[in-house]
Structure formats: C-alpha cells, structure tokens
Length: 262
Image 1 (cartoon, one colour):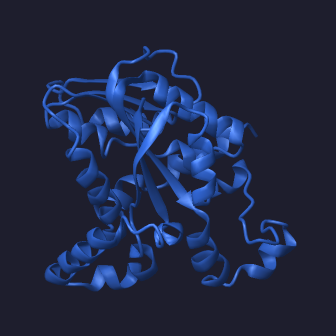
Image 2 (cartoon, one colour; image 1 turned 120 degrees about the vertical axis):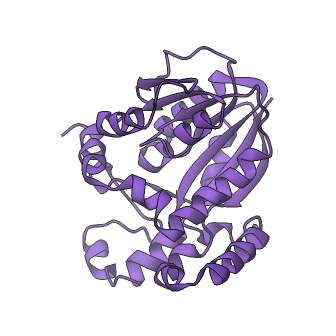
Image 3 (cartoon, one colour; image 1 turned 90 degrees about the vertical axis):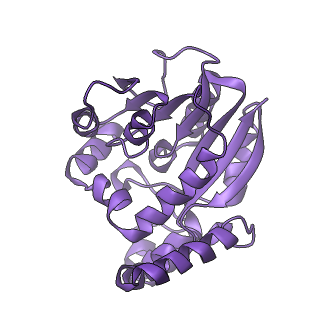
C-alpha cells in the first residue's frame, strides 16, 4: 500500500469534523490556534491552509471575509469542505499534497497554515520539504503556523495510560530513550521540541512563539465533557495562561509553532 493510502483510508472514516467542533479537547486546540491567528489578521490578508481537512479553519475564515486558498490531500475531506460553501466566499480549493504545492506561487500569502501534514510525515526529508513549501508560498514577513504531535503525551497517555507498553516494545516501536517509532501504517508521527528546532534550521524563519495548542486537555478529556460551561471557561482561562510555558510544551498533545518568514 502506498504511504498516502493509509492516510486516505483513515480520513475516509474518521470524524475530523467532530474532533474540532464538538469535542471540547478539540475546541481547545481550535480556540488556541484562532487566538494567535486572529492577532495577525487584517481584512486584506491572504491565507493558505495546507492540509485543510474538512475546512474547520478554511471555511470559517472564508466566511469571515478573508481571501483563502485551501489544499487538501484527501478527496473525501475536500468534498465535505466544498459542501459547506455557498459560492459567496472568496476561497479556492485544490486537491494536493503538502510536499508539492506547485499550483501556488512564491511569496503570495500573508499567513500559511500547516496544521495537519506534519502529523503524517515520517522522514525528516519529507518534513523539511513540507516546511520549505509552506515557507516558499508565504510573503517575506508573513507567518507560518505549523502543528505537530508530541512524543511525551503519546508515551504517557497511550503507552502507559492504555497499557500497551509490552506490545509496543515487542513491535520495536519505542527506542531506549522513549521515542515513539512510527510508519505510515501507524498514521501519526511524534516529535520532541528539539526536533522542531532542527527542522526550522532548514528554512529562513524566526520563531514568534511555540505554543501548547491543547495543553493538558486530552489528559482530562472525560472531565472536560462533564464540566458545566462556567467551569469549561475557567479551564480555557487556565490553559491560555499556561500554553506558552516552555517547561510544559513537551507534554502537550499538539504543539503550534508560529514562525515569521525572513
């Protein structure tokens, strides 16, 4: 099976829509990303989203009046995204791969969102290629938002929390220093903060912030669903007050690297 086939099969069945829109741990991730994104936007911004999924960001931003270009690998996701549009939005959609954005010109976008592809790229070469492509299409002085899945949250929650240690060790999916080893069939690739730093060294960017997109939200995901609205708002307040703490970044499920193109 080709690498992309595992991913396409997964997203043909997965409820990505529900994760960001209805589940509270997903809402935390979305609201955190928008919190930092909205600070950079003005009415004339051109936005590209690479790996747009079903359009949680792209469609919402287009309906808010922004000029949006959305690129998505999975036709099923792109069909859902397009079904949300009524024709009044200033949005262009493309079926495409984050590793080759040949349909998009250099130095075009004020903000480029790369919020999913790095989850599913398994070699450093591919990660660097995707990052270079995102940077290439961004205007000098523009911003690139890059999301990653983090190693330690996976070890804590799924290796030990789900009691899968023995089976993962038998399959040689953990290194001696507790790095998760994954292949395309495993769907998700985990990184540490030092890996993100290394990837950034290949592109002409400077970091604005490295943020915990969901912080500890998945650790208490069941409790989050039981909170009343007031308590959930207090959780958001706590999360926003701590999501930039670098001593906590490594333990978040999703990190958000906010870069500026030099």
